[in-house]
Image (tube, rainbow, N blue to C red):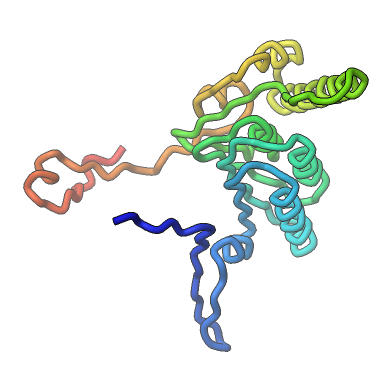
Amino acid sequence: MEIPRIENLIPMVVESTNRGERAFDIYSRLLKERIIFLGTPVDDQIANVIIAQMLFLDYENKDQDIRLYINSPGGVVYSGLAVYDTMQMIRPDVATYCMGMGASMAAVLLAGGAHGKRFALPNARIMIHQGSAGFRGNVPDIEVAARETISLTTKLTEILAAHCGQPYDKVKRDTERDYYLTAQEAKEYGLVDEVLEPSHTLAVSPSALTSGGNGASNGSDRR
């Protein structure tokens, strides 16, 4: 029996208020806590949504941080730069968190968070590279497109170098090919400031798994 696919499943959160119960989609509920989630490729649509959320939170409270959680393979450079510029323009600090993957344009957004407030989860992977484009058309059009791609690549390299504290030439050299980093390597490179480690780990012994025990730790296995 084939399991039917459920497209665009968005969980709902029900809260009790003095006017009764109220349902929020999970992203709206997170927005109330000043949390924005980028969990898709970056394109015009998602960029416009994120920008609108940031502008709203800036208007609502200019002094309280915004938290941007990133799990994205990157996407359209123009769209990403629109988000990046908004992050730099608004008054609240934008703290960035990478979980899963932060690649390409998403890595630029990760690095563009407020200094000291850029984080990666332990198993996150970050990838930086130069911009790319597929050229079609006659020779003059291809030349124009190539110049624009070079210009964008230079701009992205400058942004990464500035936020990472790395020499421009090093970033340019590193991004000539896909450059993958672990969370710790991203910290050493300057893409993030801290790797967030769990406060403790609940260990499960093999005997508990085989004997049907509950696998709970007595606390001595915490680290």
